[in-house]
Image (cartoon, rainbow, N blue to C red):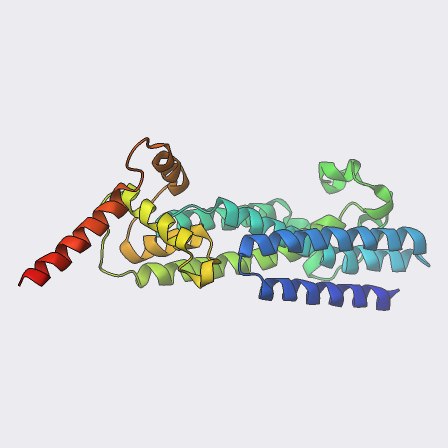
Length: 273
């Protein structure tokens, strides 16, 4: 059985790596990864329900060492996907947001400290209560979902192990994001955007519509963040600003039109010299 799980897990990692390497849109790639993980988890469940376990030791090994590795990846990519979709604009706002996410990890750690100690120190003396199906000790601070989950494929603490593994990965991800955000802040140019936020939003959407970045594959959020970092400005809800531009009854490209007029005027003045 161990050979089957190892092969399934290796194939899963290969699929994930291929997806993340090929996709230009990070959020779209995470969505596909989550779909694959749900599919693989369903297959893993079907296999376990059909094959069963030879003895309790094999069952404990599966729910303590094997299943959590699959579920940890699902937790990790789903969490990162949610973090990315909710990430605010501007270096300061991003820093605060990422630190709040780190604090969530710390709260989970504090709330589950005893189990962390048990798992991290490779203890086994109550494995028969934690990682055997249909054994639930209410005194062990169980999560509510344990009572509602499919008990054929769930123990009281296999999900907690998956959370520990996933949180380790999420912490690394958040710290990398904070480091990158700090570098971007430190590398900000001395140029400041002094026209209106609406004007910059109009310019960004025009460039995105023209497909001038990454052969038209660049995400609008990434373009906006790049301009924010480059010109020391926080655009806020730039999508809402764009919707207001669309709602204009006349002169919806006011700033772009003024750019054309200013450039033509500059050219004409130089021709007259």
